[in-house]
Image (tube, rainbow, N blue to C red; front, side):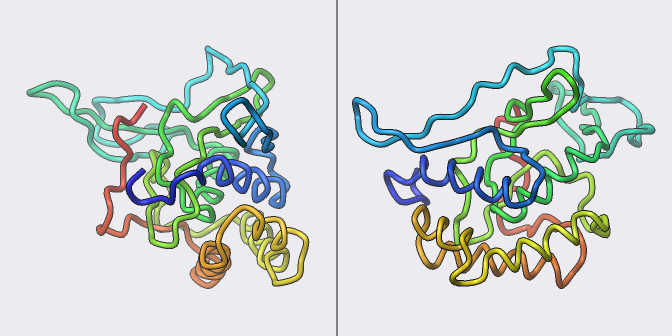
Length: 212
């Protein structure tokens, strides 16, 4: 990828798992580094998604219905647009917070895996932890809204865990550059300071393409 250092995507996948575990939300499947026939790479637990679960939808209504949050208009065909919406669930909202922390540049619909039993997992975190703002996601429904108390508490704890010398900070230093770890701390502090979900910056495409 032109804007990420070569040979670092596997480490970013593992770093996303480490941050996910530190939140206590377990949103990223267990992810580890392993030696393989072409060198070191990432191995992740396979998750079977529930095919009946619906997290994203298109509606011709002007507003998202109950239980849904609006993302924005989507081009359906040459002459028609529809409103893209995502489900308004605690797990999706937690994932939106996690993505803001790890600076996820590619949160597509196909990266959302609702497991049987209701737990949500997010996958494909190679395009993360850039020092510049790269947040691109389909989960903009809470943009600008106040963070729930649970997320605020998790961010407080995460901020302490990222302090130099703490085990999480030491682990991230094995996977990311010093500047990238510092950027994680800065993003956590910014979220704590504003107390709100981030909004699109306008300096980077807010929606990943293709969205699925």
